[in-house]
Image 1 (cartoon, rainbow, N blue to C red):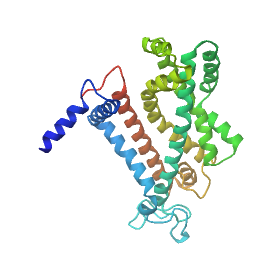
Image 2: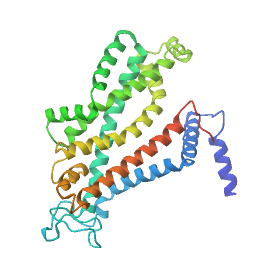
Image 3: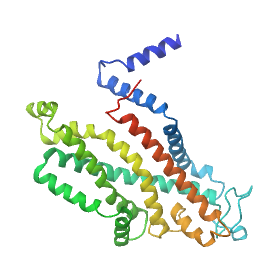
Length: 306
């Protein structure tokens, strides 16, 4: 009985002619989930990303020690049963600092993506839809940002705004949006003269309604894929700013800042800088693997198999 119910639900989700918009959306989500589950590397990336979220949410309960309070009697202690990843120059447990640092990393990634992706998506769709002078002005501005290395540009903005997490988020977001604008513009150009856009315009829809209700949703899949792939770069940029002392300020356990303080002990107490470096590599790899899987699943030219 249960198997028949599951089969009927699956048939309803995969119906070629859905009766409602909700059925169509649920069916598409089901197809994407099944296709993603067939990709082992994408699932590894998903596990890493979910693990980051869980660790960040449960940091106060998972961390065995305080990430800020030091113990000079145990400074630079090697990995042991008491301190699995060792301690730093102030006797702070490195594992606890990495766990709490996941919160800072996740906060930066989410805020940058929430600012840069919508901004770039809006600029790209407006530029591609209207064309002409609007396109030249917006894409000219985009090219100015793309012509400079992201980290150097972020350093310039942080130097002007001052160190801190908030300013680091603003600086990284300012340097990240042009990529999304270029992608959205390229996709908008492929269908701005399509018959369905002309039909919507003939029905009296305004340009604003067409852009927000019909053009933007068509560009969302590529934006989601790019945002997932870009999160690894965001993490590395944030770690670079923290390494230079322009990101999160002490005593916050930001991974880049931890590496910066541990470089003085890299030859003898290697764990101080190596452990947060491993955290950056693993999390960045997880976002890259998940982004590759989403790109394969959401690519409209490949289609989604059931």
